[in-house]
Length: 426
Ligand code: PGA
Ligand code: ZN
Figure (tube, rainbow, N blue to C red):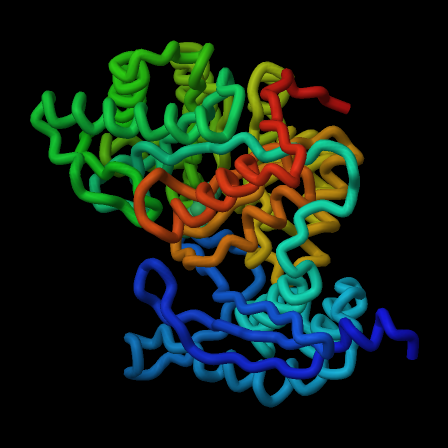
């Protein structure tokens, strides 16, 4: 064996049960390499999970209300870990292929996607050792997408749309982008308070969770918040929404519960187009459910290159679903969440496929996340272009923005904030 491989051989893998930002159990894992490098990660977990996501293993039973992950931890310590020891951590594809084969299911439901991802990420983290780029070219830092108002499964304020966000499209640096996002969040909170709305409570991703009776009230609140912040809507800061529409869908169409309105897909499409026309919205995520491919293609055709249409639950960071989306022109952008698919290699493949087809990539955290910053590093390594990790409060969110700020401030790395370009479709 040559010396380089010797140095990056995995010598130990150890997992334990930890807690995510929602206070639910999750898998933590530490990997050591022969030369002493180590990686330690805690895996995230979603609330509005897509139907086709890789499957987390939960214990059931009385511990932690059934959310315990002792089985997944045991699968790392007894099966996945021992099998990875002796393998070369520098060959992530080999490690991940091996982990996937050990599980043997497409959704990693046997050993648990939370167990598999913990090992995959900890191996990646040990091997990359904080290096974010091997090239001498300037490193593009992803443009942030900040959550300002939350609804749906992430808040109890009642609106159906899950996230209302801003993208600081006019910012020249991460430092400015973060300060602009902060300014909008604070101004929106002040506007909400002036309207007698209790907006102070922090939702799962750190955004505001005002109690509102209409989805449009939230859109109005955000545009007013941007204006009150002194930034220009649509010029400095654009709006984005994540509908998470799988949560709204039933057999007949889409159900806006806070407005008590039931809409068929055509009516819902018309509402979305009205919103896109009426507000400076530059990005719409999961406008339809993860089975409604036809409506997706209709919306994408209707907006063309004007705005980004992002598939989250639609693609679940899964190569085959993205390929179908590209063939059917269902969306022009893809959300990338490593835990939706279960290995670093599978997520990287989705990024590569997307870029090869002119599909934009937005790397994303989960609503149940952790203090880790590997997601920021992956987004930079992949040159993903955009990063979505929630709002500007709660340490599991700010940790990831802080890592971006750290990279920008590092005098040894030549960085530049990615610019917002018009979408270049294939
Ligand atoms: P989740 O939500 O982590 O609860 O799935 C995040 C998103 O929908 O983007
Ligand atoms: Zn989403």
